[in-house]
Image 1: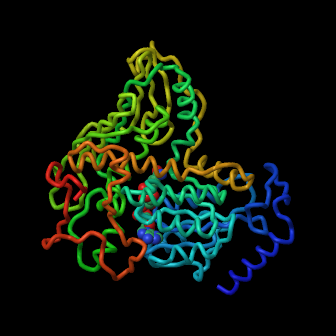
Image 2 (image 1 turned 45 degrees about the vertical axis):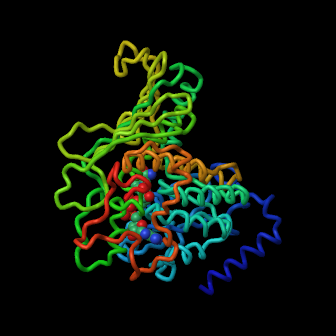
Image 3 (image 1 turned 90 degrees about the vertical axis):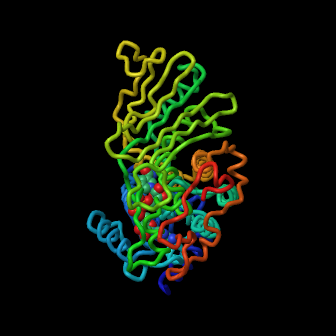
Length: 458
Ligand SMILES: NC(=O)c1ccc[n+]([C@@H]2O[C@H](COP(=O)([O-])OP(=O)(O)OC[C@H]3O[C@@H](n4cnc5c(N)ncnc54)[C@H](O)[C@@H]3O)[C@@H](O)[C@H]2O)c1
């Protein structure tokens, strides 16, 4: 810790005495101003949430080319084994860029603070824990003046969305660079399609259709808590099963297709109605429905129809489409990339004779592109802040989920002003403390009951 503080002091005095705004270093790939980097010109990265995506995001961060040196210097998680595994993986693959000795590996619900305390203004922190913690972690990063990459969804309910929107404004005021892991927004094929659609190539959008229908993935299904783990840590570990932690499978898995569809329309829907149900639950007691069908409505009356399913033995599809009054388009073809975006004459999507345009070039990995763009913005002090859009996409996602879970029409405003904060004290959790969701006496969990529980989701 003493070493860190002295580094901090050195950096501050460097910033003061060098008039750093004008300082620049020439690298192979171009000019890399020091204005937003440490005095050594090394951009320092901390990782909070060392699971699958956190590790992947760290690899993307450390793989950015031609933008100056980047180092991972601190890691935080609530499970020591997750941190250890991520560290071993990163160290093995990217040893020269990983400088995280045991004293900068932090475990616990406060670990995020300790990891961020290893950074200084201009450095960047990654948030890839379950979404419930996002506003807590983002709040601390904004307070400290850190640049941020945070995974989607960034909120799961109305009260935390309001908080996140305020933090987004504050991060803009502080000129922080903020990336949100809706990486498809950085996809070159979808970007080209969005321009064409907004330029009128399919005429007015009448309907968008989005599908994520797959067998169960992630922690979609959870049984009763076994012995040997506390209720809180069970819910945190299997966060896809608990609405307070993640917005459930709905929010976690469907947000990408919702967001890319709304991007084509260039606006958010104003209301949603939906259905969904639990069919093959067996011993699984988590809060998820097996399937969701949502009709989102935009202000002009046009629609986004969304289908989400986690079942084996059914048709699988993971794609989004736009139907215009003249022509139609494939937004994405299968999973996240390559999108293979295309435009067709009329409504016969897939008809070779009617193909009007397709993205011809190779599609770079959007998970890498979002990092290339973020780091370039940090180095060159370009505008880059996705916090507000990420919060809005998360709210629109919650709106469809709440419509399905309650059986009611849910408007954008109703979702934003819904006062059910699902984990009110999530910033005060301690490892051996109670969980935000109390199980029933028999070890099952309260579930959504559409038409019966209508003001909140369980
Ligand atoms: N953009 C994408 O395509 C994409 C893909 C996968 C996951 N994600 C997102 O990334 C996030 C993590 O998902 P994952 O698949 O990596 O899950 P994961 O379970 O593999 O990783 C989550 C990690 O966060 C840790 N954690 C939990 N609470 C924490 C806290 N309070 N502080 C610090 N660490 C904490 C867990 O122990 C775990 O190691 C989710 O929001 C998910 O939606 C995005």
